[in-house]
Image (spheres, rainbow, N blue to C red):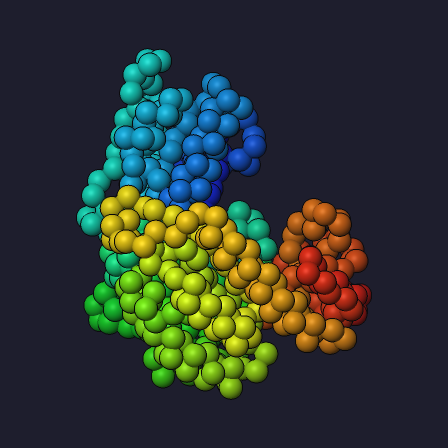
Amino acid sequence: MSHPVTVGFHTLGCRLNQVDSQEMAARMEARGFRAVAADAAAQIHVVNTCTVTGRADLSDRQLIRRVRREHPDALVVVTGCYAQTNPDAVARLGGVDLVIGNGEKPRLPELLAGLLAQRADAGDPPPVHVAPIAEARMAAFAPFSRAACRTRAFVKVQDGCQHRCAFCIVPAARGASRSQEPEAVLEQARRLVEAGHGEITLTGVDLGHYGLDLVPRTSLAELLRRLDGIPGLRWLRLSSVLPAYFTPELIEAVTGLAVMAPHLHVPLQSGSDRILRLMRRPYTVRMYRTLVERLLAAIPDLALGSDVIVGHPGESDADFTATMELVRAVPFAYLHVFSYSDRRGTEATRLPGRVDAAVARERSAALRRLASDNGLEFRRRLLGRTREVLVLEAPDRATGLRAGLTADYVEVLFRGPAGLGRRFVPVQVTECDRERTLGRLQAAPA
């Protein structure tokens, strides 16, 4: 092509989706297309959707319609979890030219080439390429290293999930657990570090299951040990790991390897064993607390994050009180609070004991207030201390200040010169409130 066809990517949902979009862009460019910013006047716009909640579906539909409205002459492609689980609904939206499932993402270049060669007439239904997700296999990496990652780099090492939690649509959207070969992970990590990314986060749906499907078998702990040896890699993070996966070997790795940032995200979902059983979660409250105590004993400054679902079918006042008591007792640095949302085909939709929407909103608000208190207390411990931060490339939108992320996952705003993006600099934490943490750059960068 003398003038490459341009493609813009719009991504909703999790970090995994963001990595998928980066890999799709890399595959497109390898086939002669040119990836551009999402807001550019591209000839093709790809919307990578989420479906974890009903609100996510609404956001998907709104974005698809906005993209079509703002780019009336472009081809609009819809992929991701909403396209996988409800392709007919996506095809009926209007203004969509192609629907592809999660398993078909690696085929995007060839599907688009076919669409461009024989563009459909206006009013024709869009082609739909969505195979059963159970047939999906782990695609080989489409290596990327340039600034599409911005400051922080993410590597997808695992996809799909072995669990069948009662509330969760993800297995229907992503399929069974499947892992990337360790050598491929190591090569992608080296590529990112060589491109200037000193921090890498490993992502996956069921990350703790990494390696158990490979031949020969390996483990997340072994992968971390191998990544620890990459020259130039300063901080390594994990996106989220279920408590049941914390074997002695994994605990030793996350608490003992120098490259591991003191930050872990360990989902909880409820502080009531009765609700955890209804949710079909593979752990108990006691298991969770025992794990947290062991992690905190090894890393006293650990930034511990978690997720909690409020209003799950069957949740009583006593169950919610148990959740509040556990969150009050555990020093969470941050908490993601979600209101339960029915997902078609999941077990929870058939459970009795529906929680009134107004009650769920009250419980969410109370839990978020408590989480805010915990987060402020965690950040106050940094006051007066000088911490190394990874400077983000984009300044803070509200203040225009530079923004940097500490190893324990606190964003600090400070005054500093341009050109610090992706660099590690010392910043003294001077002030914090519920909205932000402020600091002072301690040394002029070389």
